[in-house]
Image (tube, rainbow, N blue to C red):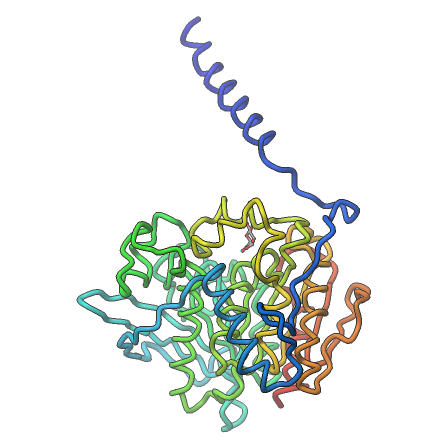
Length: 413
Ligand code: GTR
């Protein structure tokens, strides 16, 4: 009898602990009426209260001030030591995807102080013209082999996901036929996305072998991935078949947060796209709708710098909000996209953030969203800032891609 009862009590214990845990967690708010009243920090006023009235003042005073605040209090410093990189085209074809594309697989090897890390980049470029192609640059979540059924793709080192399993997010033929290339790396190549795997990331290059080596302002995973986006760009600049003046940095979800941070820091990116980036990305933190700063820092303590955790219980005291991050992309074209069912990422918070960022675009004589009324679903607004909320869930769909291509055609053709 004892033997039968023991497993029963274990299950009961685990179940009760789970209930106690969930009950102690603050409830996720999905009710617009329960959004706290908040005041957004001003874009065009410095911490000392000086008004910013020109592009020159924005670029010389306010932009650097905001950039330091986001660096020190949220995303953490990006490693700035130069690391030696070598590029090796390990596979290529000029007749990929039934003859329409050039495929290249480039192994990027980083060496520093006896350490080595490798990243494998997969690229498809249109082969219909001899001209250098503009490129959408985007990390993938589950390994290069998941983005297409192309049997020649070399699987990424940290993934054993099956070929083609994420194909719905990568309409590569459509992109190539529209005249654009795609370049991608599995984001794990720069930091396998688990706290305890920091030693395998690129951070040890810079002296951060474990979490205890990190100061309050040192970047963690998002900084490491953003660093990776810039290192991919270093290669694209060298590739004569790529038009490096027209590289679009793009990311979904946690990688949308990363694409924003990479785009803000590296002005070589000509356009920035945030797909469902949510909390810590495009969404306003002060709304506390869906995912909150408290929750993100508790569940993903290895993403942002340690200082960011100070705000878990006092997000209204953040010295900035995410509309100011978006404004740091100006005057480059910026696309923020939400999904109707993706309440966790707070679509309205993403929209309002993009709308407020328009103030800085106006300083440049450009049109931001030009409205504070959310558009209907599947009705993109496309000025220098673009926004859409599409039907469906947290994902990257053909609808998203079609509009990113239209937006790129509008500003980069
Ligand atoms: C969730 C996280 C989000 C978002 C998402 C993703 O678990 O709470 O902030 O980053 O993961 O990256 O898919």
